[in-house]
Length: 435
Image (tube, rainbow, N blue to C red; front, top):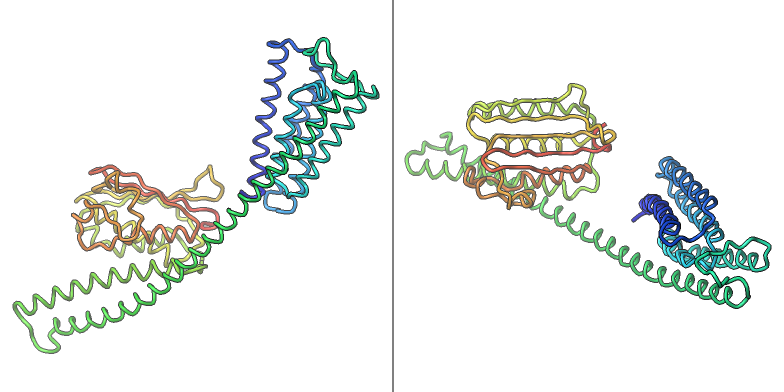
C-alpha cells in the first residue's frame, strides 16, 4: 500500500471516527447519564468534520506529489492528536478510560510514517497529556470531572494521576515499538515478494524471447516445406494424381495449420518479451472495418449479420499491430463459433463513470462457453470441448494473445456466456490507452 492509498484509508477511517464519537456521546448522555461538556465536545466534532472535508479536497489536488503527500500525512496526524487532547481535556482527562484510544493513533502513525517520526509522535503525545494533567492538577486549567466517579477525583492528589499517566506513557511507547516491529517485518516481506515477482517476470520474459526465436526458425522451415509442396501440387515438377496427390494435399493443409499455430505462438512470445511497446495514433473504427472486409468471405458463408456501433471520432493511441490482432482474434472467434445465420454485435463507447475510458463489447449468438471453462479460456493453449467439436485445428492461443495485448496496454477483459445462446466479451480501455 503506497502513501496515497494509506492517506485515503486514513481519511475514510476519520469518517467512522466522527460517527464513533457521536455514538459515545449519545450512550454517555442517555444510557449511562454521564455529565460531560457537550457543547465543547460537539465543537470538537465540528472541527474534526471540517478538517476531514478539507483533507479530502486537498488530497485530490496533491495525490500525485509523493513529497507533499508525506508531509500532508504528518500534518493530519498532528491535527488529530491535538484534537484528541482537546477531547481528553473536556471529558475528564486521565479519568476517562477512552484516553487509551490514543494507542490507535500510535498504530496508525507507525503504519503511515517512518519509525523515527512514529516514536516522535509517541513522545509528543505523552508530553502533551502530562503537561495538560499537571496544569489541571495545579488548577491552572479547569479539570472537567467525570460524574461517573461521584466520590473520587483523580486530580485531588498527586500519586493517582501520575500513576495512570505513567501506565499510559509506557503503553504508548510499547505499542509504537510493537507496531513498528510488525510493520517493518511486513514491509520487508513485501519488498522481497516484489523482488521475486520482478525476477519471475524477467525469467518469463527471457523464456518468451527464447520461444520467439525458436518459433521464428520453425516458421521459416515450415514455410519452406509448404512452398515445396505447393510447387508439386501446382505441377511444376511433374503431374501427381490419385493417392499421392491426396497425401501431398493433406501434408500441405497440415503444414498450413502448423504455420498458423507457430504464427500465434510467435506473436504471443513477442508480446510477452517486450518491456515497452511502440504506440501510434490511429482510427479504431478503421481497424475494425478493415478486419471485417478481410473476413467478408467467412461472414457471407455463414450468413452472419454484423451490427457495429463505433463513433467516427474514435482515435486510439496504442500499438497498431497488437490492436489489430486483438480485434481480429475476437471477431474470428465470433464468426467460427457462431450459428449459421447468427449475429455479431460490436459496440465501442465512452464510459462516463471513468474519466477518459472506453468500453468495448463484442457479442455473438453462437455456441457459448460452459461455466466451468470460463475462467480458463484465457490460458495458453486452452480450448473448451464444445469449441474443439466445432473446430478441431484451433491453436488455443487467440484469447491468450488478446489478454496479453490488453495487459501491455494496461487494459482488462472479462466474459459472460450462456451455452447455445452466445458469448459477450467486454474490454475496458484506460486513459493511457485511448486518448
